[in-house]
Each structure stands twice: as C-alpha cells, then as structure tokens.
Image (tube, rainbow, N blue to C red; front, side, top):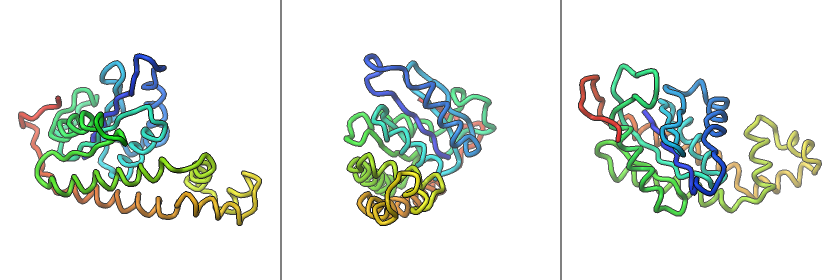
Amino acid sequence: MFVIIADQIDSRHDDDRVAGAISEIEHEHGDDLALPPERTAGDELQLLTASAEAALEIALRLLRDEHWRVGIGLGSVRTPLPESVREARGPAFLAARAAVEAADKRPTHCAVRGSSGDEDRVADLGALVDLLLTQRARWSEQGWEMHDLLEGGDTQADAAERIGITPQAASKRARAAGLKLDAEARASLSRLLADADRSQSAIGPNSEDSAA
C-alpha cells in the first residue's frame, strides 16, 4: 500500500490549499483510493491507495505548483481498514511520516520511504523521482500546456488545433519538454514502486505498529 502525506509549505503566509487539493484528488483519482484524502492537521492531508500509478500521479500533481512537501510511504497497513484515513495504522503510515519529514530538507520537496528492508531500492526510487521532478521544473508554460492536453487524451494534432499552432510546432514543443520520455519514465517508476511495495512484509490486524 502507499500512503501519501502532504504538508503545505509556509501555510501561515499562504491561502489554505488543503480543501482544494482534497477536492481535486478525489475528482481525478477517487476510484483508485483505498481511503480518501482527509485533513489530518491544520495544513496537512493524508490518503491511502493500493495503486502505485495513482500514488505517483497524485504526488506529482501536488508538487507541480510548489506549495507542498510530499512524503510517499510504502508498506503494509493494519486491516480491516477503518472508515477514515485518520484512524488507519501500520508501517506504511510510519514510512510516510518519515518521508514527509525528510522532504522538508530536499530541493524537490519530495521523499520516498519504505517500512522495512530494501533500503537501497527505496533510495533508488527516491533518486529517480527527484530526477523526474528536476526535469519537470525546467518545463516552460507551453510545455505544461502541451502535457496537460496530451494527458487529457488529445493527440498532438488535436492539441495543435486547440492551441492554434501548426502540428509541427506542437511536435517541437513536445520534444523540447521531453513529454514522451516523461510518460515512459512515469510508467517505469510506477512499476518500480509497485515492485518495492510488494517486497514489504504483510502486517496483521493485531500488530502494535501505529502511525506517527
């Protein structure tokens, strides 16, 4: 399972972004969530998902606007699941707490942590996520616009027509941003995250592990 803890950066001097983030996550990824996102502190949200792809996409979306530090925790959770993520417990929650604390010290504001073993594998995943985020930080506004249209299901020709540019110009924008490579990297990272999560040991309902 994957736990995401996201903490709003400099929330005392910014608008409250938690409610908006929760609404967007539920709209875009509601079907992928084992427990939907909830506000767990004044400026923090948590969620639980079994989908590596959803975990990565949610983290990337939160990090895009540079208002969040995000921790991704891998591992098992205590079952049966409660109705609220605030009541859920297990190693994955401890890992996510460690991750969001580590994210505070990282330039990308993101960290990945596992619940047990495979430290090298988890460190490798964190480095790859950092690489992806660093590449995205170089995208222009036009690159992001093209990314959003293609992710929304448009072809490059469709995107070109929407934007009002030639197909050749659209192709140039996609190449400049490395959108094909980005999509391939996200797919690979999702598979690697899923593999790492499967390596974590199961936890029974009577375990004494609890979230921080």
